[in-house]
Length: 125
Image (cartoon, rainbow, N blue to C red; front, side, top):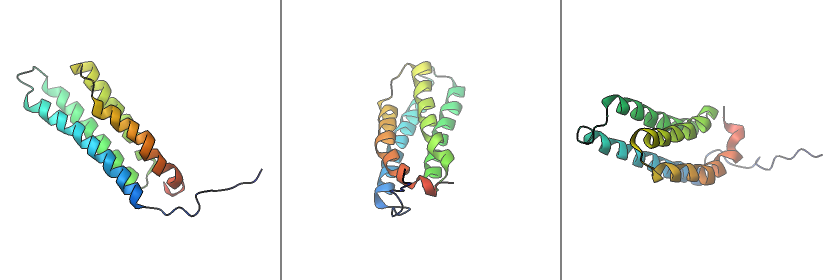
């Protein structure tokens, strides 16, 4: 069987790559905005302070994952969706809230993000 690499001519960074990363960043920041809003009301709705250390840490991991994807690091490709899934699970378990931003973010990651990442996988370290 012939060994063909269909992505040899694919440039490293394209405008569509940055657009996909930008869309993922917007939805990640929307999740962070929800967390900031909950933090501003945490005393009135009785959310413990330790929860916010945990959730803001997960938000930071998602943003670091996006930065690592832009830096072409393979760990970012795995870190970003794991952080978004952890963010969703923490909200679902502790606050009983279903975050559509996280679900949409994962959908966009699979649909747009991986569409831009897979052809560039050879450049990832």
